[in-house]
Amino acid sequence: MTQALTLTPKPRFELGVRVFLPCVAWLLACLAAGLVLVLSIVVFAVYEDGWGAWEGLSGVLAVFSAALFVAAFVAGFTILPWPLLVLAAKALRFQRGFADVILGALMGGALIEMVSNPLGQGAPGVTLAFAIAGAAGGLTYWLVVGRPK
Image (cartoon, rainbow, N blue to C red; front, side, top):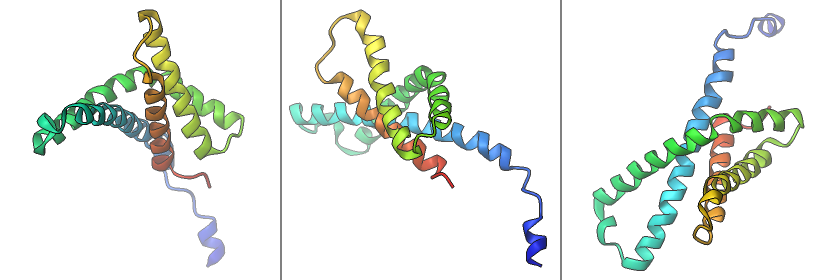
């Protein structure tokens, strides 16, 4: 009986999960990065001016809608480099959790530098904020895709 169970074929949906799950994880990682960026701005706004417009349900909805808006931009900028970085990390046999977080942080910092560098010097700490958001996105990607077996 045990031998028969080990010889059964793998389910057909396994390939779909191997393709679909990383795509969902990437979208959730973009949302997490957008949420971290928006929340960092909200924290500084609340620190400077008090709660004001951020009180209640309207503040929560404003933060979430702004996070979705920022996540769309993050998704647009990372749609090509992120799969290439994941494939490179797998080819070089980097440890998954560490590589996802570090590569997310590097990509977040590098993307804001590429976008803002032609515009001149930006506000101080912007690269760090985007690197932290990228690390949060990388961590989210790793948590959704799952640990390697």
